Image (cartoon, rainbow, N blue to C red; front, top):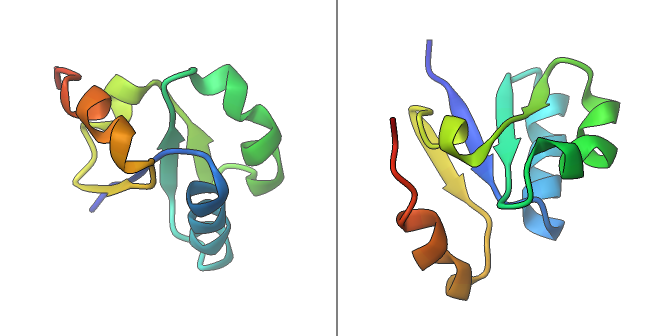
Length: 81
């Protein structure tokens, strides 16, 4: 089964999470502030879109970067376990 991760929780990341939920596609969403900061976004999605640590999201099969261009180097520096 293919796993999907949205990296970034701003306007684009939140909109993507909503579309994944509407399509009943399981996904995870992460940001640099951690899963607790995503509660207001993910509480309306039930178990479809789950907040996770960034390192866990980077292990997904498909990564969607929804971050400002300047933030890409910070995400790229993260080490995938």
